[in-house]
Length: 406
Image 1: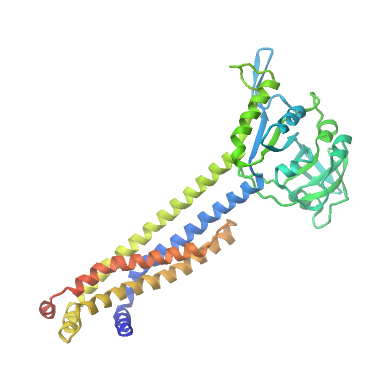
Image 2 (image 1 turned 180 degrees about the vertical axis):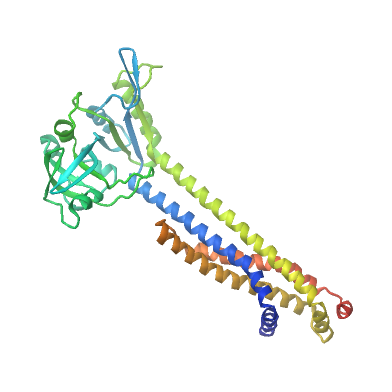
């Protein structure tokens, strides 16, 4: 029975190929738009998630802040108000897992005939743990390097590629601000940060080496910023409060007086960025879903026209014994076939478009099975929903009136 109805539906659609194609076109555009927008949105979510993971978990950044000298107020970062002793004190707070004081700067780096301007960070060995950063090759520097201010360096992937190309940099010597440094290792790839900065375009050297032999500092032991990693997400609030109170006490900041440091919760900022991306992804999907709605309305309009044109045919079928259910099923099957075939074509176009975007724009896209199934299911449901009314109208025609229709 169902085979006969399918054959009749297929024959009816074949008799009006152009109209069937135009009816199907709305569904094709709708499904391809949903698949493409969802792939781009999920790709953006994946990129943000990778950036968050590359930052390190449960991370705070404590920045040197504004200060006042001789009645003149200076902005944030104008003076190095944080010290290594502050970092050591923060490390003793409950809920703190790791602490890494940092002395950042930029320098010209030279290897052979190649040179590269990059960020050179003076850090402690704990920096790699705080940032969840592994080595792709070589070994990290140790506490003895920190105490002796040795000239050793760890290279980011971008720096290693720019200076050494395919050559293995481990054990080689390069010059930072004309001082020789031995490369101990190469860091694993981190990719871009949330602000678009290339995290692999960096060199790590011992903090004491940076302070004494590369940048110099007017205030011994001072640092520009401190990275702090909490032991868990649940302890983030208590760690932030403890750090703030401790630094107020250590810097002798009275109540009502401006603090000379800032505490930033990077995890909260990252979560906010992830939520924004998720909302944008949902918004893109919702906008694309409007196309499916328009496609469904198109199916209903064309099916109503088809019922009107085939009124006499319906009357003849009823006269020779077709039941109301048979007429309903025939027109409903036509709507479902148009939706499903249009959906399959739309899926192919959507997946192809996503791959094209990935190839041409180098934008991350994610084509998940769930999004494809949802698009397919919604498209089929739209076809059934909007095809039901014309099918019911055809099934409820009066056979005598239908036979008289010209």
